[in-house]
Image 1 (cartoon, rainbow over the protein chains, first blue to last red):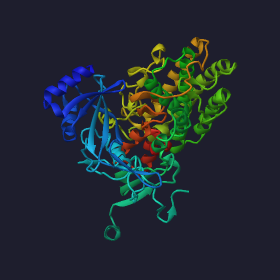
Image 2 (cartoon, each protein chain N blue to C red; image 1 turned 180 degrees about the vertical axis):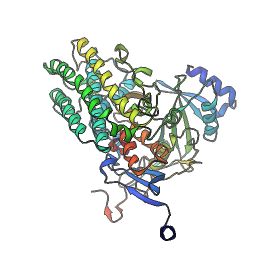
Image 3 (cartoon, each protein chain N blue to C red; image 1 turned 90 degrees about the vertical axis):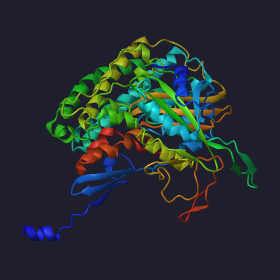
Image 4 (cartoon, rainbow over the protein chains, first blue to last red; image 1 turned 30 degrees about the horizontal axis):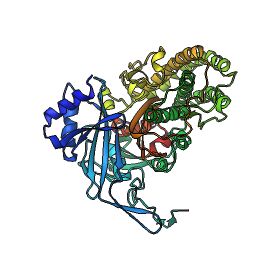
Length: 176
Length: 377
């Protein structure tokens, strides 16, 4: 079992570019920030390194950070431009019993993040859900399609903060 | 004759849709099967028929308002859902919970585990062709629901466990009735074993079917009885104790392949039977030790957590239920993400169904014990 500091030290020694890996405190939790292009390398390392052995991905969360430029429309709704979308990875080692939270951010205009579906198979559906509801595109995912929304949903990603309901869907009125 | 048959019969693979309206998919799940004769070549699950934007709703509601909504995710284990959610909020708020509240929560969660397992076991029997055990398990489950009704007035969706406490104290008769139930229920487990568990037809249908190897289970993040059926001793109540679970003595049953291979449908079934007995053990200890106290002393008037993230998880009857909450300091959460155990457990289904017969799909789905309410949210 390793503490957060030890885990961070190991990661920093392995991937020694300063700007790619840093720590961050969000409330009571420590998070390791990783540059999006590196996420697959880090994930593979975390899983395969015997002294780390993160064999299980508990949860993968997509978040709209709502930190872009806001323009308010006449009806009170707003549009966002710029800013980031984020992905949180909750990892755990069932044999060594330590846990870790990784976070990576991708720009809202081009939200492409490497997929870890081939490292932890469990992330397959989580990534599909993050794509479906937030609109993060996971590069290298075996089957990146909608999962909770209908396959023919063409009105965007509902968990975006600036999401607006369509008026009609297949001839049915949506806001009722 | 054989020549004619060979020349006329088409031998293409066939696509068969199972569901979304099918009694053995336990809800509105559609499984797209690609068949070679009766053998499954590929099985894809299509979900989302019950999607009702739980996570989007959460962003527009205050923290206590979300509790009735979490009831409706895994509607067979609403108490456990509430417990996980309030733990995540309390982690952000950093409040001390009175000891009596912790005991009440554990008692409710364990009763809920038995009730949920009874549904799982009964309907699993139903799926594999045994009708009687279903009636027996639902009769016993009804007695637990009566206890819940006595506590908070609702049978299925409770809104009972609140942030910082519970909505009502226990009814004066509750502890007596709960102890009576435990005494009543112990022999019923033996009865269920004689009726279904060691039944030869049932074993033929479930043993060596849908074997889930432990490495695959961990890689997919499978949890709960489905993981323990594969022989992995992993229980959040022991690995990452929450509430007061570290105060009780109980064992973690794992699958041993008694009827066939470790990790088959029968093992997943049998782990649930053994878990009910362990839940009874926890209940006995909790009912004996429960202290007096005020259950609403720590309920905050206004739930307004600090900036930050929190992830809390509980061992639900179906597996690891987690809530990931991002707070930006307002009365409403910025983002709530749920890790529903059934969602993750179902994702491994297409992997273990390959190569089996169509009839085995029913057995495998039943043994995974999924609830579409929490898969689709």
